[in-house]
Amino acid sequence: MSALHIWGFERGDTEMRLAREAGWRRSELVWERVMEAGNRAWEDGRVMRARWLFGLGDRIAMMSFDTGDPRRGTAPAALARIHMQRGRAAKAKAQIRRAIDEWAGVGAFIDGVEIRPRARSSLFHLRMEVRHRETFHDNLRTRYRKFAEETRETMEGIAGEGPSAGHRHFGRWRGEKPNIFDDTRRVLSACLLMPDAPKG
View 1 (spheres, rainbow, N blue to C red):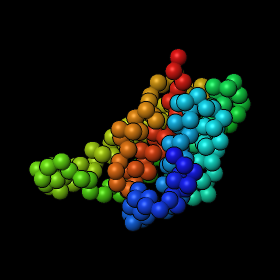
View 2 (tube, rainbow, N blue to C red):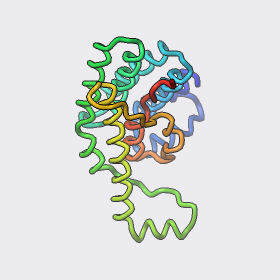
View 3 (cartoon, rainbow, N blue to C red):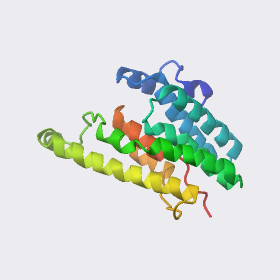
């Protein structure tokens, strides 16, 4: 992916147009793309590239996202993972403390998420969602709280405050990534755009 595409200035960038039409700021999708690129670099063993991209993602989040937005904790957790892998325990500890502090408000964030209608595979499923909207939303929030709890366990494992949880994050992003731009995508990106533990 080119730097131009990451920044969303390419002509014909349909995803950026859809995000903007949905009320997202450009920085939100740029952050998402930068974090995706950092995770791919980590998977490819390009650790310094991953570190630079996660650092950039951290700066974007600090400048663009409000206090209480769990995405502010994702890049510090990613950086902590890298520092720990490189034997820099003090730096890892400082970053993971930041991540855990930012994660403190995730429950309130999930309670207030706006859930926009999803595309459904059949008219039956669409009608069921409309008829039981509150139940559907409650179930979705419960699912996101589970994601958030797993992310907290991963952070605590990196911090040495609990066992290594072994949860998958970026490995699940490809399958879980919503195709609409609402708060659910913000929550899932916060939970899943951090690197998985190195294999082996």
